[in-house]
Amino acid sequence: MTFSLHPDFDGGSAFVADLKLSQVRLHLDARFPWLILIPRVDAVRDLDDLDADHRAMLMDEIVRASAAVRALGEAWGRPVEKTNVAALGNVTPQLHVHVIGRRADDEAWPKPVWGQGAPRAYDASRRLQSLETLRRALAPSS
Image (cartoon, rainbow, N blue to C red; front, side, top):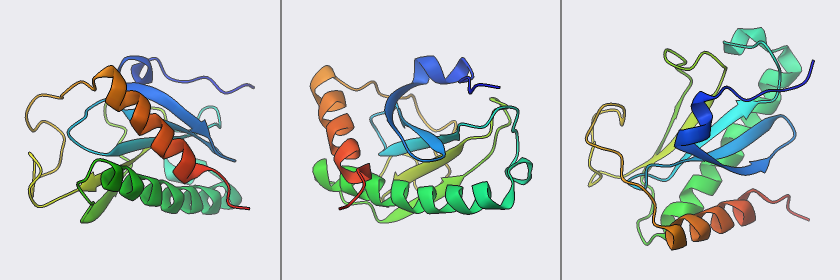
């Protein structure tokens, strides 16, 4: 089987990079530095659908994504104070993990980001700069 991305991800996120296991996507709500990791394994809905090696790999990628979210917050001049990680899947059934940078002064604090206010679209320049920052942060270190 080949990997296919659930169509829900097309409109609300942009491709950033492929890691060893996961596709990394930028969630297109410019209020928060927010990445989504989608393991490129077909027919997985929950973490326990992954084998032990893939679960360990996903955890390593979550840590990398957390560092990239912090780098994005720095690039925006709004350092991340807390990184939230969640794998809900109530709306989109394909296994995916959200990595979200939070600040005590963000629009949703201290509540979860879901359902809090209206998403804000990226302008073209900030979106491009954000993608470049994330790709640098996720690039393998030599």
